[in-house]
Image (cartoon, rainbow, N blue to C red; front, side, top):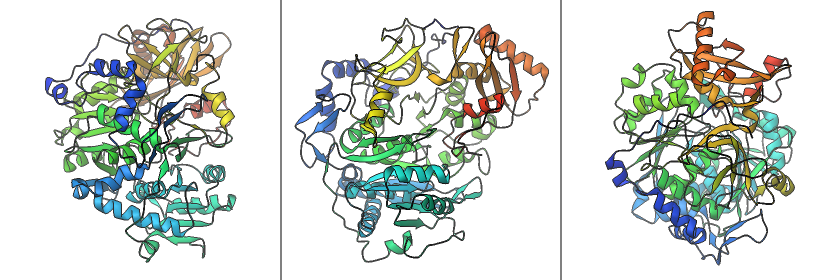
Length: 635
């Protein structure tokens, strides 16, 4: 691969305070990483011993049939037991497990004891509907407590949950129901978003018409809008939970460590849905360990992962790992700027949130409204911040650190995937940080940046990001399609036995990893490879730009030229003078090769409801092509 025209600013360091280092679960990253490298199996066995097992494992890692690795072979467990049952028997029974606020302002709280009871009741409801170990259950809900209960109840009875994010269309939902062969669907009458109702039950009705395998639909009453309820198929959640069948006691199913826990369909798929399969044993060990060490979770914390439970971030770091650790989580139903841009800051102040984990697109979106909104609130409870979903540009990193964290809070910029299950490249609170870098691999994880032949590339050069050793929370297969699993993730470096992430990255001279983005987000201009993230970062570093998206458009001479779309901050006007100023800025910040041929000023960008910019939609618009599947678009 070629040396790029862009090199990250690796000389900008931020260091945590002595107090943060002293109190961290991991004060010495280097020593812990060395321990994991020396004997990975012993390292992971040690972490697994922090959890409860019905029967111990006989083998930590079975590598006899790569890439179908198995972890904690012979071990018997259930993630729901570690998330709820054991806390209900301990001093944590009366500790707050979940604090929830709805977009209209309603509030609910659940202690570990109460949440355990509610999950037991719903687990018994699922049994009464014929759900048993190994069955698949599709969940299509808003961001409400019942979504967590549904996932945990499925795990408790040994069913495999398939949460479909509420932004998907009827056809996308039907495809996922069909692929998973779900006979039971769990949903709501609707969900609140930006003051409007998302009509989830109507979407389910249409999807079920297209996927007649569904026998039962359970509906949570959230918005109380009128909906159709089909006799003999549809049931109100509250009615079922009030029946004698919904006993508060339910035996937890004993599961093998390798038994399936959930299927999660990756966003942006086309054609046949790609269901990523995760299992009980290794997933619970890895996610709980990563959350504890990276975000330094302590019993007094109030943890807020501002993702949606319908994505992997929500599965791993809203539902499962915080509960396994006995943490107190906060969850919010609606949009971050509704009804005003201070909604998040108001809630952090009100609830005393100590750790906030969110996406760069949310940070940039709130940054656009200026500093006055967060500055009117007391954010002194915060001690750590986090970023997930895409590379965070340095400008947004600095704003998050200065305005929200008041220069006290280290930012944990995490890189990982649906497929990996948990954080893979990430800082810890005790290490030095570079704005825009995900830093180093998590202990027990070995990554590299290589060329097409598998050779490590020089520092500052882009290449393919690969994972060189198995890890406990790795995907086990693509549901129903093991050949596709091998072909997509393992065939490129089959000889070496490496997992291909599909991302481009660089390492700097300190070994810090800089994620460029998906390989299909790399633009080749006159033979140079430019990541969309670095162009966008350059634009956002200009004081007029709040958010930006860059795409490559085919050009006969240069191969591709760059089109850029910019959302401006308040009090800036888009005109030719600013357009030329931005081109000069990019020329200085990134390089002449990265200067956009066209800059368009826009009020919004096409995004999924998880906040990722859909660059392919912009490209289709720019080239006059069909937009394709837009079911995940927010607007």
